[in-house]
Image (cartoon, rainbow, N blue to C red; front, side, top):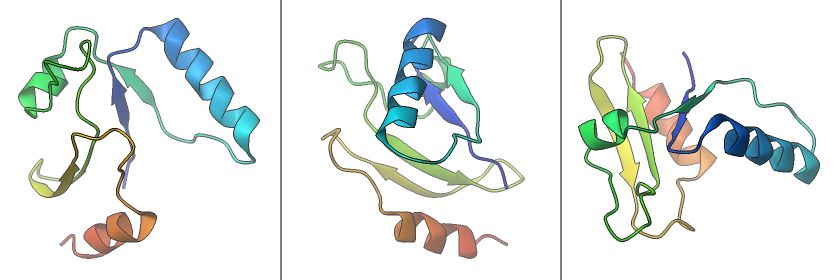
Length: 95
């Protein structure tokens, strides 16, 4: 299993975000934070938000080893995110 984060942010903005997360609490981010400045991934998954100053809709995907999306959570409200339990349930269903 591998976790990836994809953002439109540049390297410096991503670095600052990671620093803020570290200041909020214990633990390390042990997954890559990828930059998608050209929106290739965001457009591929149809989550571009035309009203969001270029920011995509918040989304979480569970993708199997063959590249098939098995579960997704896409929300217009950036404050709404899937729970850890929802994600774990989706991961448990992977073949």
